[in-house]
Length: 452
Ligand code: ATP
Image 1: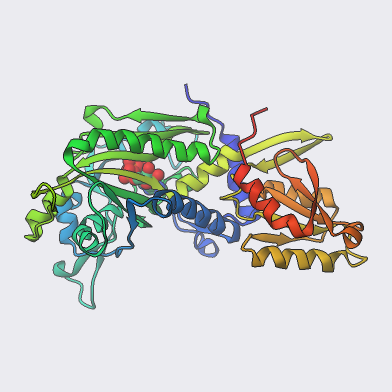
Image 2 (image 1 turned 90 degrees about the vertical axis):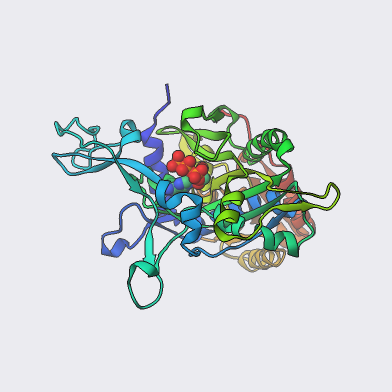
């Protein structure tokens, strides 16, 4: 049974708005269904998640290169990939209240008229399911005609397949190797929901890993483990993560195996990322449709072949939301509730809060000097001199800042500051000259504290 905790979700949503992580899009005009903007802290969180993914998947590896392909491609792309005919969800309408639902997700849906009720519980009857294409259509150029129709990409993967030969010819890569991309994707979801978990516009981090067909299983296994390890290294709770292998009936037409990394959300288990064996389907189809040979020529064996593809595909917004849900803790400290986000320091929007103990005796000047130095060292900082020091610590705890540095009367004499750690609340005295190195070492050594 999933553990459902609607209160936790409400707390996260309210924290996101109050502290500037996520706002409703077009709020002053009454919003636009399930669409969100990211505020100053949210944008840092997203950027850090993307950086962490990119470092792990591209920068620290010699066998993966990056790409940034266009959102609007030649519409033939989507005919060939099967998206025009097959990227659909089954949709049903309630004959009574006219609401639309995904026929395969009725259990998760709620009647828009009465949010406590599931579809049909309002007494309405549902229509037979119809296929609804999830791609957003647009028109290119000034004239709107059928020949000008184009699509906003529903996944970043196809841009990678279209550039397979370009990358192969311009970079010194050969199978097994990967092409990674982070970018926006668009899906006209029938029932978006659960805050930023499912939206119509979102960012994906995807990688297509091209392998000799005989190495398919070995690399599928490798990427499943590697992707799960990234979440564990980010400190996600191992007890709330699981791998779920799709059974045959769930597999996409091109796939011989797919595993979802799932997380136990307050609203139940849900997909965080999918790792799919896409076989040689896409390269073969694009070769046939374009007339361009997209086979790889192996100079050693003199063989020409379509590599098989393993694709880890995650959603940046969903990963960021999961980091918030997973990291949110409330504990009792000195008769007060302390709320904190236990982000890995690498993804925390702010790394260091810098405070003068009091607003006088030269402490603000010294604290500002230290803050400027840390900024120059490319650490993300926040200076705060208002309210009691305990309040300032709490404010940083709530947004997940892992370290706070406090300048007190002694600092002016001995150049030593207090570093306070978010998770343990322990404080240490550190020399200003050693502060940067100390913080970097603490970021590197961070481990998820045990629960409780
Ligand atoms: P779902 O079953 O949740 O609809 P999917 O299997 O269609 O997802 P993929 O096509 O595998 O998703 O996309 C890869 C990742 O992109 C997902 O694991 C998820 O993290 C993210 N993602 C997909 N659709 C959305 C969406 N509408 N909003 C936010 N993130 C999404």
